[in-house]
Length: 265
Picture 1 (cartoon, rainbow, N blue to C red):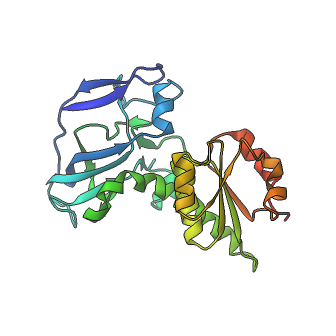
Picture 2: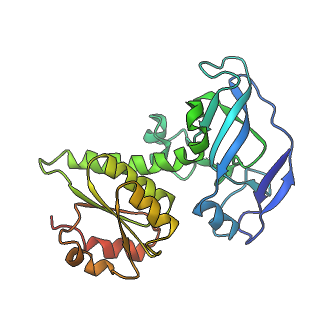
């Protein structure tokens, strides 16, 4: 079958390759790939900035934002059947730290975890892939066109959940939110915050008529063009300082600068 892979740590090595179609064992599921999202992580892996192939292999199949259709199931599989639609998770437990032992691999305290398509395990940008039933989320057919957004949505949702968990210590509740960056993660975070009733602002450096800005406006956020309004001017232009900020640019300069914009205390 066909797959798209890179040679980790080598810039611009992405290529179309032929690999063997997976064979499933008991407890495993064979899935036909429907779609895979390409994000900044995949781009940076192809730039040679990071990435790790499986043990004793030279290539890494990339792609971690996937949705697929079940075509075969092994013995012992529970509630997932042939023709179901599924989204695979990305990180695999190290098996050692307390968080991984309690089914929270995204909070792994060691460096021994694996991530499909990123670190030590092949990704999903292939015609088929196999996975353990515990690492699959079944979705309804109407979500299939948006299935590749579920993985990044889970990241944004987790960030918001942790923010509000911290806020439970106080009587005060946040009312205004700034989201720095209008990429997929930033827009998904803005959508979640807007759904939670916060006055939400999306900040990026693209024009007001760009696709990113239009999506931000369509979800009810106020879009701010960073080429016209600097971070330092935000409190003056929009009167109130934000109660919370989600940094989704990946730029540490923006993250530290944003601290000065927040409401005091």
